[in-house]
Amino acid sequence: MAHDWMTYQQQQLILRVLPEELRVLVHEHVSGAGGLDDVHIFRDEEQPDPPFFPACNERMVFQLGGKRWAASLVDLPCPVETHRTFDRVTTFKSSDVSQVLIVYRSEKERDNAEADARSKQGPYFGNPSGLTPPTSGIMEGRFSKTRSQLEQFPRHEVTCTACAINAG
Image 1 (cartoon, rainbow, N blue to C red):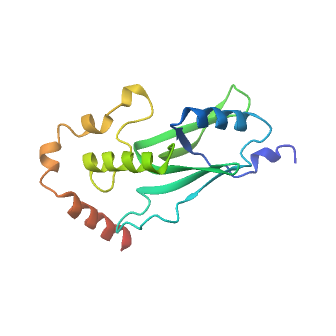
Image 2: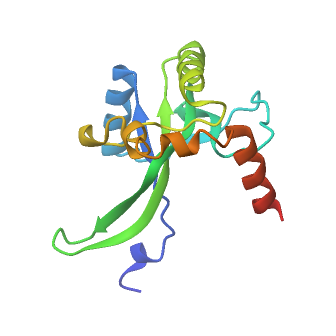
């Protein structure tokens, strides 16, 4: 077959690497001969299971080679379309991505970021900003006109109702 590269299943991920030294290491590793062979992402075994929506915010581990870093898988405020090209002329939509993996320097840094986000957004927080500077703080502006209407429904009740709908 002439186009074997087209038969592979592709998985796309938005990776936000906060430590600068790791960002450089990932870039060198991926652009070099190693590719993604030594990159592994898996769920943190010590994570307590939340009562609802376990995929809304998960504690993850990012591993490059033999070294591990703490990470969080969080929801984006809205899905992002990703596009691919093989000839640098024609592009096509390849996926909708709605989560981002944020890699931290340490578990303490991840815990502090999660506690800060939880205090602002509640127990099922996501990433309150988009991927680009114009979408910074998009969640505050997105619902600003309807905030008074949304406050009459407690977050816990909305979460329980959504869980019941998904389960049933």
